[in-house]
Structure formats: structure tokens, C-alpha cells
Length: 214
Length: 214
Image 1 (tube, helix red, strand yellow):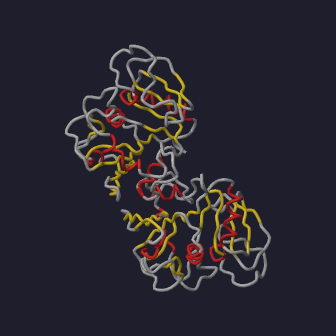
Image 2 (cartoon, rainbow over the protein chains, first blue to last red):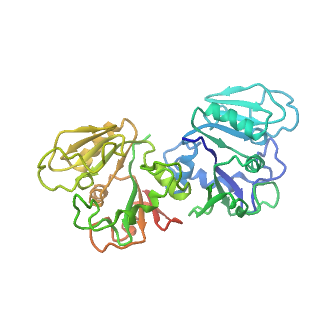
Image 3 (cartoon, rainbow over the protein chains, first blue to last red):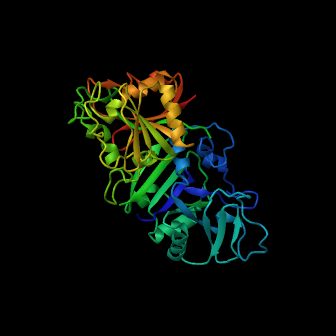
């Protein structure tokens, strides 16, 4: 069984941005309100951070509960780990993901400024300065036969698309415009030369875009 | 975590029938062509019986790969096991499911005519003469904390709905009429007093109906 590289539950605006401009410690999504991009997921029974027994079990829940299915590692860009740019000032801050990160696997953070690996609960963060193909090879080894999740942000997904390394993408398009920020696409049609596409409107208001290779 | 009772990937006609009339050894679905009800699933990458690496990974594949997720036992009606009616004439025939049944868990077959349990590969069939609540209790014990799949047919699903024991249902409605057979419903609206409903048309032509309890 092939080990797929999968984008899962990646939310963008209707004008194609995965995050707003001016990312900072206080605003991981820049000027964008993450609630606008991700509220469809917060409402589901299988949402990572749900602490009660409620939540919907309709269409959107299929996507939140597929998030971790058969995933053995994640690759993310540095901006998904934190807002710092350039050399690390210190190693004390350990990312936005809290003491129990929602990944539960090895995570490979792509950065030109490496730092020592560390573990929080059942997630270990590695920092790698390498091209997409090399990072994917490391993540596949760590995943021990399972698939690898490509966690974003948009610029990181673009890098792996440009290197033709992505097998499937699940992108949710929210009914909100951002105007600026980190762009995933101008139109999903840009990927149709290499991917099949199912476009699935959800009762929650987002439109799920499901791509798989031709 | 509660153990849910889930109907998964149950296919019916646009006029509400889960199987045609006149079920026989040669025709498990009676006068219905199972391809008409299930072709959406055959085309997906995660279809149980797929032997090659192909298949679609769009919307329909989310449903075929959810089929076994966190399932620890199945309950089925006698007609899903075989076409015999009344007392068993012999115990040699072991169901339509071949040497490697697609269940991979204990299966509880509801029948007034019990027979000894037997195992094929990693599936063990038990034959129980009891009401839905009692059978569900046995299946939950066997599932060891996982959910229980309610496998059908339509009459069996109706029995569990009448006893108010079903937590979620995924029903696919195919664009074909049968005119007669075993009926699941006249309209999905019959369930709206107790269930939420997402109606999701698929590019493959079927319409997924997803119910979860209010």
C-alpha cells in the first residue's frame, strides 16, 4: 500500500487565502478570524478539542474524523509552528499548540533555522532545513507505513504542489473574503491538469473541495 | 465514549426499497440489480473488494473508508446472511460472504431458527433469537468498547428504528426505482422527528443521507 501525502481539513477564504496578513503571536491567522475559516469543524462531534458529548454527525463530521485516520506523521511550514522569522531568539517557546498538540505523531517543521527536537505529550517536533522531497522522505520513514499529512500553511502546500508530491487534498472554502494574506490559489481549476475534483457544498456553508491524482 | 449503533453505506432505490422482491440463492437482492444500488461504492479506492490500486478518492470514498472505522461488531437480519426461510435444512452453506467475509468482527444474525456459531477467516457468525435490545446488548459486549454496525436489510433497520436504538444512519439513495421489495421508508422525512439530516448529492449520481440523533 502506497504511503500518501494528504492535505486534510485545510480552510481558505472564498478568494483563496489560507491566512490573513500580519501574522503575530497574538494572531496566528493574521487579520483573518480563524472562526470564519474553521467554524464548520468546531461544530462537529469529532472536532479535536471538543470536551462534551455533543456536536453534529453529518457531512462535516466525516471530514473532522478523517483528519487522523491512518496518519503517521505531519509536515508543516514554520509559520504554522509560530510567528517568529529569522534565527530563533530562544528555544523556550514551543509553538502555538499547547501541552497536548493535536498531532499525536512526529511533526516535521520546515525552516532554514533549525533547532533541537522536543516532545510535548505524544507529539515530537523536528526542525528540518531541506527541500520538500527530502522532508517527505524523512516523514515517510517516521510514519512507519502510514500516510503523511501536509498540514500547511498555504505557502508550504504550494511548495509541495510545485514539486508534484501531493496525492490528495481536502480544502474547505469558507463564504468569507480576506482580500490579502497567504494565497493557496486564484481558482481550484489551477489543479485540474493533475487532479480529479469533487466539489461538495455543506449545509454548514463551506464548500469541501476534494482532489485526488489523475 | 458511548458505543454507537450505526447504519453504514446502506443502499436503497429512489422509491425506498433496500432489496427487490423474490430473493433467492442466485439473486441476493431479488429482482433488483445490486450494481444499481452500489456502483457508487465499487468505483472508490477504499471499496472492500478492490484488488488494484485505482479507484476514486473523492466524496464517495469517505463513505466506503468509514465503513469499518471503530466498528467492533455487526448485527444483520437473516436475509442478509442467506435466502433460506424457516428451519435450516442443513448447516453446510455458510452465507453469501465467501471464505473471507468483509466484516472482520463478530456478526450477530437475527433469526428465529438458531444454529451453532462458526468462524470464517476473522469473522465469527452468531445466530440469535432475541429482540433488538437484547441483540444490541450482546453485540456491544462483543465489540469491546467500539461501535456496532447495523448491517440491514431494510426490515432489520426498521425493527431497530421502531425500538429507537439507532444512533446514526448513512443511507445512499440511487437514481433507480424498484417498485416493490423490502421497504426502508416512503420518505426520509419520516425520521425527522428524532434525527437531524444532511442530504448530500454525489457526483456519482447517488444522494447520501446522513442522520444523527437530536
